Length: 79
Image (cartoon, rainbow, N blue to C red; front, side, top):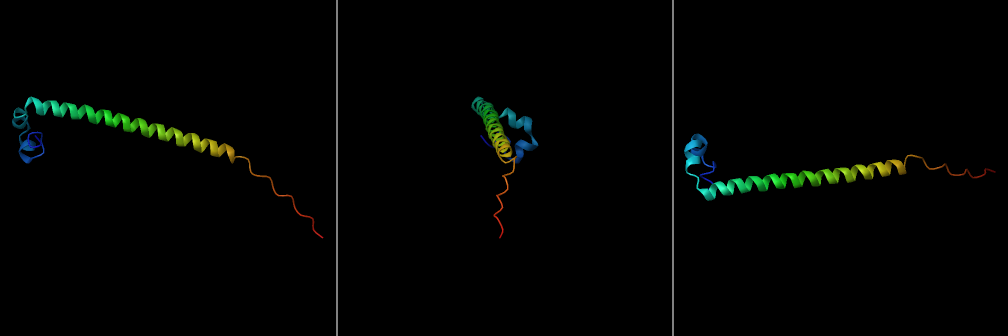
């Protein structure tokens, strides 16, 4: 099927002829792969957004925690 789907040079030079050679199974595979890739892309971007939001929230928490400096230590009496 790869040769029919455009992997070889013939299909690149003659796409219409190559498309005519596609079987119904080839077309179903191409359509299925396209849907699978789209779903995978959506899932990956969703996970990246979730991670980004989690990291952003954590940075905000750390910024709030360390916003106020620690008090200076009490100086020891000098003799």
